[in-house]
Structure formats: C-alpha cells, structure tokens
Image (cartoon, rainbow, N blue to C red):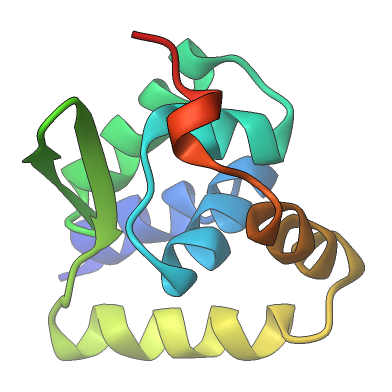
Length: 113
C-alpha cells in the first residue's frame, strides 16, 4: 500500500498534472485540447497522461479520429486523495483560467488530422 501511495503522490507533485486532473473533471478530452489549454506541447501532455494512467488515474478510449482521456474511478484511498486535491484547488486562479479557456475551444478546429 505504501508503494502505491508513494507513486500516486509523485504523480500529483507536478503542476501540469494537477491542471490536467482538474480539466478532466469537466469532460473527456484529447491531447490537443489539453495541450492548447495548458500551453504545452502534445508530447509533454502524452508523457503526463502516461504517468497518470500508470497509477490508475486516467484511462483512454478511441472515438473516431480522437483518443479521449478521462478520470478513472479508483480504489477508496485513491478517491480520498483525489477528493482532498480537488478541495485544495477549488477557487485556484490558474484552474479557473484553464476552465474558462476550455469553454472557448472547438476540438474540430483545434486538432489537426
């Protein structure tokens, strides 16, 4: 249990992964949407999502052209940690700016084929 907790907390030790977590609370998203909102490269987002998936935080599914990423339902301990982090980030200016930016994007125009 301590190894799992350690890995989980390491994932949350990165600002961009926390921002991804908050964005995925809103809806399923593709890499290009996340990259646009965070202002980082798509390979960087992919690396973050891979680390999040390794500890069971995110999953993915194919939707035609897009691969959508979403938050997974975890075990009780994982959900308790997530709840704590969500509470701590409530009202954060960066998180609010990300949510506002997300509302303005159109993935059909944003994502290249």
